[in-house]
Length: 419
Image (spheres, helix red, strand yellow):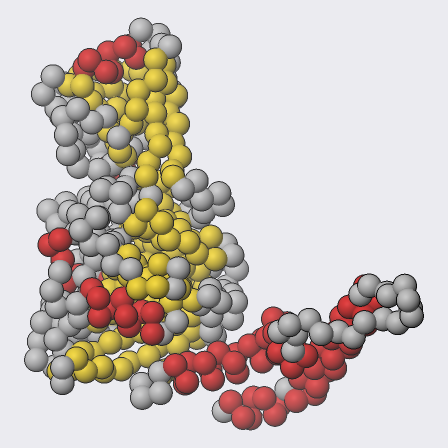
């Protein structure tokens, strides 16, 4: 099929290559024209720029402007990178790879999805909640994928098992649903690429001439001294205030109610919960303003999904499990990870474990694997019983529970509205 396809587009490729050749000639002529002239003999110096390769330049330009060439290069890349794997085409620019690696003679089953985001132009990488109306929700990955028109889905960040509330930073379409915990690492998704960093929340409530630091948004309380914000996505009611604390209901930037008990969270507002000693000062004029930003600032970030620990940082294996307070997830287990290459290909990985036919990976093994397949940045996601991958309508790995346990959230490749 590939050979026939390229034969049918032979004339188009010839025209494209001709245009590229003309462009290269133009570049060369321009380079010659701009080089310095020696006053002694008025001769133009020869082009000797280090690393200047006409063939490489031609391939780069072809790759950028010709979908046919880019697809062929992507196909070749995947076959070379995963030589002994079973490779299937999911859709344009999306490959599903199934392989087995051996550690000390014992097998590990791995499912990989690799995506050339320029070829997969009708798909968007985004986190997805099991329910956009209530964070306290859990559904199977198949339901999450189908509800979001996704062709690929992988379980996402950690969550509180009893409620389903995501634990850590989660932003979808520039809306911050939950804030960070323990300074854990997160991946930012932009229109033109990706970034990974430890994310911190910079948030405050201002009013009555006072400014109060906000410690988190829609997260379980860790200290009675923390000030938390609860939005309608948390549920109908906020938790009761901590000991010696109070909750303030805010509608249209005005405090409308104060109580130590659970308070109804308004659809057009939020509830502030924290110590009376800090929040009572806001009751004077009752007008308040909520300000939210993150460090790093990540201008233009569209989505954020947290995880931890780091696996690959700036192209190097980097596992900081202790620093992110993730000591409980060591050992050999089922694993999930997301990473990206220097060319901004996205890579999703699900590793089966806890069985004879697949023993799982340690975090260091997973980090080395992610680096070996070209990731310059990668993070660990929720794993263990949560590890589950969905491709084109079915679960493709073998989670401990058939079909996978109900999840709070996932990271998906979803069809965009224009597709």
